[in-house]
Length: 557
Image 1: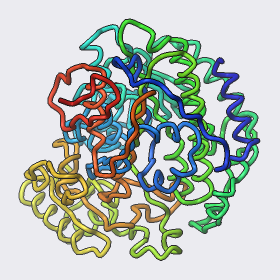
Image 2: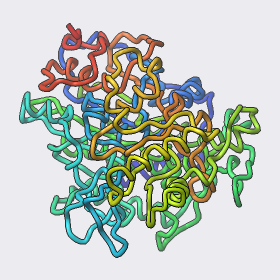
Image 3: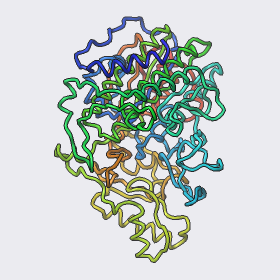
Image 4: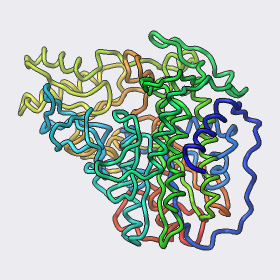
């Protein structure tokens, strides 16, 4: 079935049929244990799919996610580092390395050697080439140049050049950081184009043209509110956040023939249906898994993140999104089943997420609050500038994470600024810790289970000299680093386990399922898949192989 028709069918099903918990689930397939390496590896990242959300909803899954839960289930996978953002998290999944090695310190960073635009902006986006003339961090050319290490796809091509790598995602940074430097097809949704695009000069396959046409048609029509299953109804409770109410929505979208209301479409199951539909079409059209070497299909499902940011993680909207994602993945697996290819799947996430403090406060969560406006780097820097009699900007950054001292400040004055900044941050009641870059760099990387890591060890795992801040600030648990809610009302990016813990699910037809409750790390995924394929890991990595008992090549010994 071609994408245009399959997407339309999926959208009609989502709009018309309740996503009921009592729906019949997938029949358990009986098959002998695999006798050879799989022909196709499918890697799925669900943006902002925390271990907490997985635990909350796992009993409700009936389709794709239910199938994955019959395999190897690691409910406590860790994005172990402190910079729990999309770009660093995705850089760990198929490299086997923490961000300190991948070079992806954050979604964006400050480089004072770069000054673009009329205001001389120093920001650099993690997945851009800032050296190209006429670009800036908001009008950029997507690029893999900042990723310092190879990915699983590159390992596969080194072992057998006939292997193909196809990466499809709702965000460029997801597709690029998982796909790496040697991809055969790379397609991601790009807001500026309002379409799935790739690097300049790449030919557009028919599958991508069909996907873009189908999305345009669907957005022009809009969709009615989704039916609310019984499981979701207790979550449908309006919460006042700033000037609007969230938590009781049903993800309706008005007809938008001029394509102006993209945000609502992206924060819905329809976005993931488009991403997975395109991935399935490319797999079928390219006959992935049917060639002379194993292939890699990467899928970055992004809608959960948009729902979490704009509507929170605990309302009816997230309930509908996750049940819709379950159906979407089930349809993707059905399409792959129909090819007859022996494929293995891993699903994880780039980071977790934290709900809105207004709802947390109603649930009596201690310390749930929004960050005080005076904690932004600009406000702290202004106070330091007044005390030390420094004119001009002093600090760059937000209210948490990386904070940079202006490059024009040198010598003893720079040391004084750093000391004063650390003093002010550490004295603030909303701050758990503030660390200098030198202090973090001097910290020995942790080798213990990730839940035991100190704040410094978590910071060390995502510290990249020249990209990370001159100091890094950790807010206390449940403090949301958004002072004034607007379009974005909730987020992630903290040092805490609600942002670090994600599920890791491995599945292959015929494998013996099990659940391992102890902690593992997302950096373990790539070496585990390499062992499953029977290929060598050509570089030293931070991760280790997990024995899945899913075939002869994955013994990890």
